[in-house]
Image 1 (cartoon, helix red, strand yellow):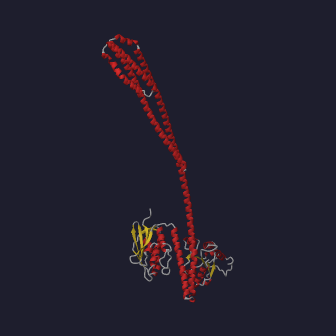
Image 2 (cartoon, rainbow over the protein chains, first blue to last red):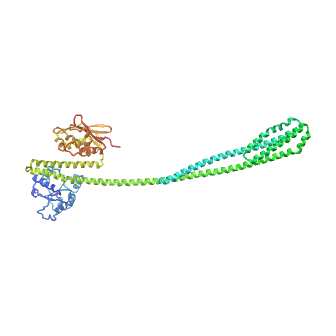
Image 3 (spheres, each protein chain N blue to C red):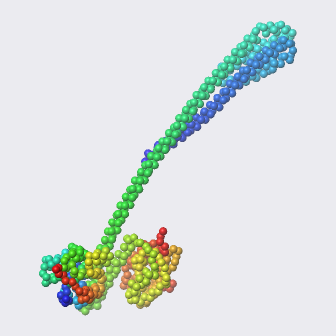
Length: 150
Length: 463
């Protein structure tokens, strides 16, 4: 898959954090299209292809999801749990990107089937490093599954 | 309940005391009565004896007179002489013995008179005989006055005797009655005392029952209260837990934002910014970093105060190695030399807390040195009683003795933020951590400059 076709869905409620993620991808020279939603319900709607995310072109199925845990409306863990129950899209790799390092959150996230858990670095350098690593591993190296439901 | 029990008990005590005193008094009076009765018996006996003696003496007068009248020999007068001499004394004695009874006294008077008469008659007869008038003397006797007096005397004696007996019987009856009354009284007062004792016993049992009930009620109340309090505490703890969690996330997010935005500003638009503007953004970043450390440290401090720390045996050497490995980047950056006097030993503590404490102490030792000089840190241990003291000695700025206690309090700093950044919570965490592990900590001035910080922990589990 070309990087330009590798869509990333970023579920993040903090606008500055979202801004910084975009900036990090730019600095890391990752041309992946980024799609942002800022609450849990919107994430579910996007992945369900429900309005206002019905347009497949504008809102393509992501090949990777960056998921924050603290979200309005529906928490990241609830989104994850929902996602893993949906045929097809349930396979999409999910990287939790959150400020919480609480053991209970880490456990629950892995129990619900996340693929990786990253604690938001305090500074941009750290974020940039993480995004570079994501680019190197999850985007470039990792084999992404299809989301067909048979 | 105190009032209910107190008054009856006091009353019972008073009544019992009264009963006992009354019983004692009754016993005393009884004993006296018995003594009196014995006295009366003795008296009656004395009177009877005297009466018999007086009668006998009166007879002796007659015997003497008779013998002399018959034989005309003076030696036969001996009984008469004797009797005459002794009669007054015995009559006096009789008078004394019956002094308490007027009737008997009168009779004694009669007896005295009759005795005198008898003596007079006998004297007369004897005189006549002495004078040689034998028949004249005999006439006196035959006249019968003598005999009449004797008969009267006998009658008086008999009357006195029976009267004495009657008196004795009467007194005996009185004494008996009194004794009987006393015995009854004693029995009653003893009975009363027994009743009182019994009622006291019953009251005491009742009081004990009430006390036990009250104690049970208090105990269950207390238990209930403890349960409530424990539950409230657990709830408060849970609240604090979630509060800290919220702080952890919600407070640090804006701080993080400030940080990255200020950095981004410099990175992306640095060229368009003046030196001053770049300085402002640098300060924004510094403030954000400080705020984040502060929040983190406060959360650590709060968690230490809240959580129950379970202590285990720990190998200080292992703990120190782990900390040094973790701190290697920071220590290298500061060109810190760390020497350790191994083996350090084993203590009882909480692993994570001890790591944090040692990290803070080493971090301070590496940070608070003259700018430009390399920190030299020496770690050693010392056994003191049943505790192990870990020393962290540095060649840094040192701590004046007047500040030695202050620095372990929250937010206390000795240096300006620009000179030596810090949150002022690090040593507070050290102290709180040490205390929660059952130990203590402190600082002493180093031999030259610098400081010797120490933390002391138990070497054996608390019993």
